Structures are given as C-alpha cells and as structure tokens.
Image 1 (tube, rainbow, N blue to C red):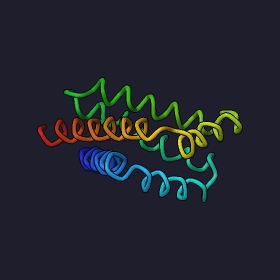
Image 2: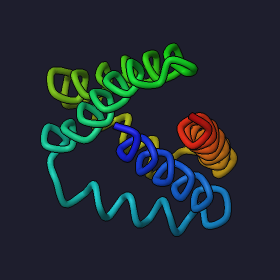
Image 3: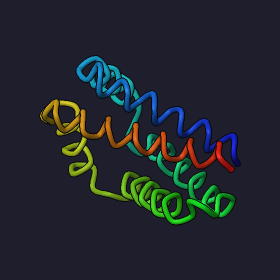
Image 4: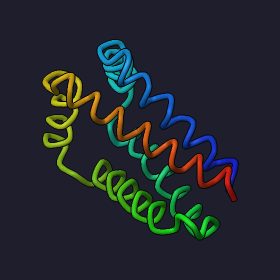
Amino acid sequence: MRILLDFLSLIWIALGVMLILHTEMTRNYLRALFAKTQTRVLAAVPLTIGLVLLAGSFSQPEMFWLLFILGLLAVSKGIYFVFGPAIQIKSLQDWWFERADERALRLWGIICLLLGVTVLFYVVRT
C-alpha cells in the first residue's frame, strides 16, 4: 500500500507543478486526453484512486482522516461520473477545459502539489 501511496503522491506533485508552471499546456494535454474517452470510462480513475486512498487510510494511522476524506471524495466523484446526468458532467468538463480562469487552474495546481507533498511526507516518514 505504501508504494501505491508514494506513486499517487508523486503523480499529484507532478500534476500540481505542471498546472502551476505550464497551465495552458497542461489544460490542452488533459483536454486531448479526456476527449478521446467517454466520461463513464473515465470514472474508473477516481474510483480506483479513491479505493487506494481508502485502503491506504487504514495502513497509515497518522494521516487516517486526510486519506479517508480524500478517498471518500474521489469515490463520490467516480460514482457521480457513472450515474450523474451526462449534460451536467459535460458542462463541468467544458468549464474546466474552456472557461476556467488560469488562476483557478493554478490554485488547483497548488492544492495538488500540497496534497502530494503532504502524503509523500507522511508515507516516507513512517
């Protein structure tokens, strides 16, 4: 489980840094990546990440609540992508890829970076 949490935190750090430093390039890359697959298929990503975080919360007692809450949020997002109204999901994706301000994307980059560093710090420390 520790290896999966390490990998996940490194992905968060990389995504956060890319969103902060190369906002438009990262947005275009993610837009192209998500345009190729259906939303229902992409729901597997947050579901998997959520299950890893939920399982990891029980193996890392120092950060149980952080991982548990993040896992619940990710699983909820995956369930929403599977069962939610397609028009609303499309509108959310359009906002993220087309209308979101660069500052909003950089804020999410900072959040991703902080979450990744926090999880990596606690996992490496134990």
